[in-house]
Image (cartoon, rainbow, N blue to C red; front, side, top):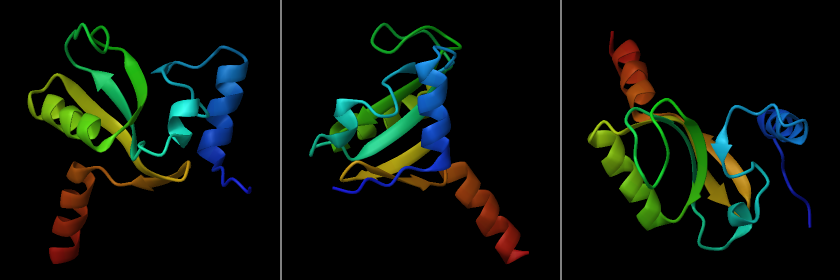
Length: 112
């Protein structure tokens, strides 16, 4: 089985190996990433303290199912979190996708 790993993932794994990673939550190469129900990866910044996720100011990585991802989008709409990076997970491979606010700015730039 061949696994694709991006330079970002290699750097994250190296930071985790020396315990200098500022991201809390799940490791970049954790088991959850390879679970068949996992469809998304998000890195979030906590804007407010949430008992289920963490304290205000924390930067957290989570691998999510479809339902959990919908819940994260809802938390972002409620201004509890800010999604900083996101990816679609396909058989353990991360396909990074632009954030919605970045898509909007690209569309505006293309129009003008």
